[in-house]
Length: 499
Image: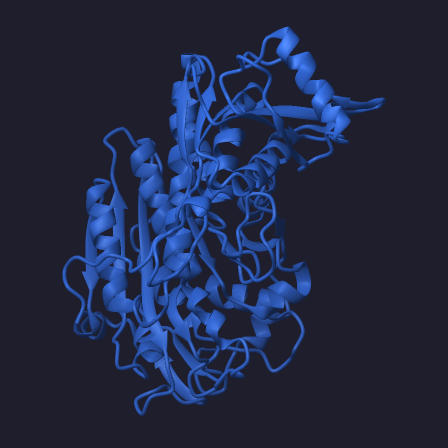
């Protein structure tokens, strides 16, 4: 039984990032930019070094073969009276090709490479405040898990002092808020399923949401049954840990638009009776990545005080093959009355999401954005780094553009006409999988479409690959949970609020 307040057993560590008008008199290192010019290394002027100190730093960098190529990190002793022991040159590549994403990635690499250094003063904000701040925080994040030992000094994230004019303070704070919200999503996804299950997850979200000024509603299994949430119950009833539905609301007074957020919250996915292979099943702790992202997004929106009404509806369940589990061939009744033949219990995400989408649609929002680690077909179609987005065509296309703009790659995908027929079942209104192998991502989108209220602009973001990095860290993306697509959805909310 989870208490009314629940804390994650482990949180990731990340750099402290501060804004200062002037550099402190003493620091452990200076972090400056370097570029790859046509004739070799180029080091732009910086307020952190005098002209003579900059010249000697350039000579030292050139002597050790620094090129300024993107992501390159070279450390040299600092000139006398520089106020630091070392200068770290961060390669940003060709100056003509530098954009926010290139800066964000490079800053992320620098943050990861400078753990244990101490206090680092940087002028990277000269090339973009938001990208620099986001890159440093996101890239410096490290999740150690639940361990018996403390973090060693050499592993401690650095403290970055970002030197920039105070006029950028609002942009600085907003970037820090968004980045730290991404880290919240990462922490949730990284948590093991024996600690984070529907009841404890709901308790944690409640505490975080109330702290951010959100209204909270949590439905337990008895309330879910009474109100007819057949999809959520069908998935959760095979587990000894019953499901929950969490609703978080942000209601600013001057809001002109209402956006519904929905996120899949399967805290562990065995596949149910349609059992997954054992190899790699441990990564299924990440199957609640959609709910983590949407919870982090609405908390970020509240902290940013965005003038748009937002309601996040998060279905939480554990998909287990217990004695009460749903069987292939069972027919369930979703919230709102639509019936579905469950042919594969490992296609469970669409079952819980459909209930949540139907409930969210009752509020008659202007927009509905839903995200989920939904299909392996997304990875087959688009790879592990690019989300697939389906839904209302104009809104879908714009959301995909926003994803690419903020560095969370996304691509618009169609809903297929033939699936409107193939989704029909002889035993119920619809069925949860297609008999055919092709178009699996789009078929899942067609299933969800059945539950979206009339007149609502909507988008479904399949993050099966992008939410989890099973490879080595890169740029500002760590190993394991990535926090995708928090920054995309926050940017979309900002755009809606400003329209």
